[in-house]
Length: 383
Image (cartoon, rainbow, N blue to C red; front, side, top):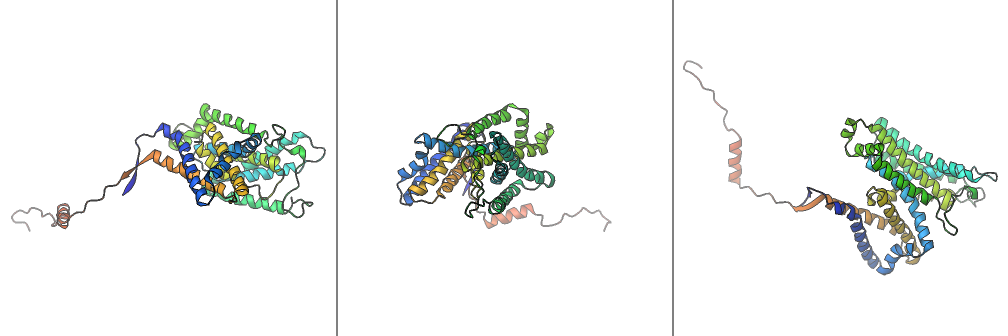
């Protein structure tokens, strides 16, 4: 029989090298998958790993996809390092999009470019309010934040559906469930002409730098991480566990809401039922592949956006289902989990229990069990 035995010391090299190994395993399994589907593996892998970077326009689209993934992952990293498991970033993303869309719909002909800032602020507040519900229930009633945050994703999605099918539906939209296109003045400024890359990319990169400073150069960031690693030590040091929960969830929710605002006021330009694109869930993989480090998450966000674009191209060029994106994301995650397990544990063969003979078993039982009760000494004349 095989068993997992904890390693006495973790390998520092493989702690950082396992994401690369997980990617290599994903590529190998993906190659076999393309072959089983009757597609050219070289062409299939090229769709995922070459087409998204082959020219300037493709790189721009790659950055468009990577921006929300990175922003959401940065917020989730604060949660996960604090041992707060926010799985509902997708719902906070949707609520940020709804709040930002509501402000964008207020724009008219007299509105100036200044409205972009209120749109972004509304997105941040929308995500924070949705995450604040999770923080409140965790703080006051010790509710499980995994279940609460995940269930709120469905509530946010249903609320979005109600709005685009109901009061915010475009009367001139031929009965399609969508709002009117936002005015041009509400659009997030783009970095260059002919590209959809917006200032959201700059915000994401600046956010990565701010998170690095917060986590590794401030007392508050240190308190967050100590609270996650050793809650008892954090309490002994005077760090508030309640404050850590609120900071983690509000930061994560605000980041997801900002990503939602950048998405609807940028590439999408309106609210539709298809705003939930799975970015909130994919960002969990981005955070862990990036080792919860800001620099690592930049590269993992680019990798994950390649999977998104590759899935779309595989659908149009190879006739494969778009769900192939999720297959590659899942392969990467499970490969990483397997590598991390082998970093922390080693496989050992468990020795089979030796059979014990009946005679030896009886002798052992007699030796360990008294057969007669002890008799007290008596003296003459006593009964």
